[in-house]
Image (cartoon, rainbow, N blue to C red; front, side, top):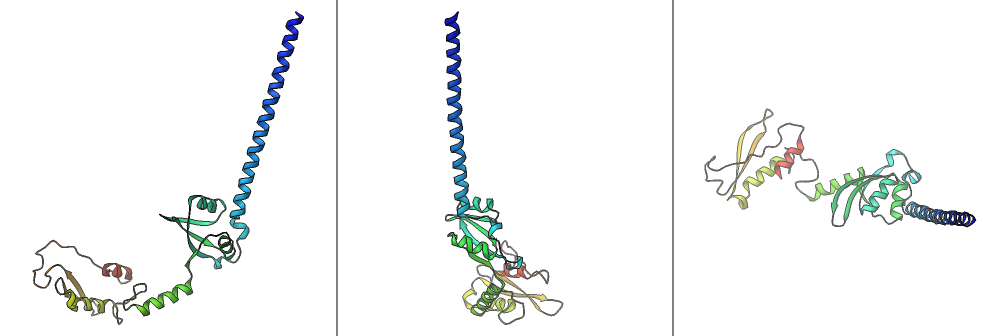
Amino acid sequence: MRNHRRAGLAALAAIFLLASLIGSAGAQEDDQRQRGTDQRATLSGAQLPPAGIVATGRPGNLKMFGATVDTATLQELVDQGYDVTPLDDSLEGIQVALVLSPGEQRVLQAKGLELTLQSAPKEREAQQAEVATQSIYGWNVYRSYDEPGGIEDQLLEIGSNPQYRGFVKLYDVGDTIEGRDIWAVRMTQGARGRPLGSRPAVLYQGTTHAREWISTEVSMR
């Protein structure tokens, strides 16, 4: 009986010792896992500080920038609270738009993120003026119908250009209420000699309404 009791006590002691060892090992594993998590969080924070910490300046000082990032950087920007919007995927990475304060811009550039300014009224106006000067048609700026180099002048130039005589013909199809000519351009092989309606046709119509000036540019192009 005593031998059975001693054997039982020995087995119970062994169970307690094994449980103690398992608990200690589990605690050490949890501690190591926690330290690894803390270390990753610290490294992440060192790479990209939260947006709220570096945001400086009035709302009017915010500017939009473009950048190309990888998936991990995009997720980190989102996690840190930056105003970031994915736009497109390319071979170089994910193209994003970022709305940043001056402080956020400086921090991200210091961390190696290449930023391209997307919206700056003064810079944009200067660029539009330069484009309008360099191009007779001013593709990046508004063109009126009547101005020199405007919509009507372009239509007349297309219709009279000898280079296009084999497949282009210009028609005056009426007048507007204000007396402007309404022009139509026919484009088909042998346009000047072939009767109207002799081939299947597609009609592109622009400037249906006075305020929809962009529809004119789309049709012209």
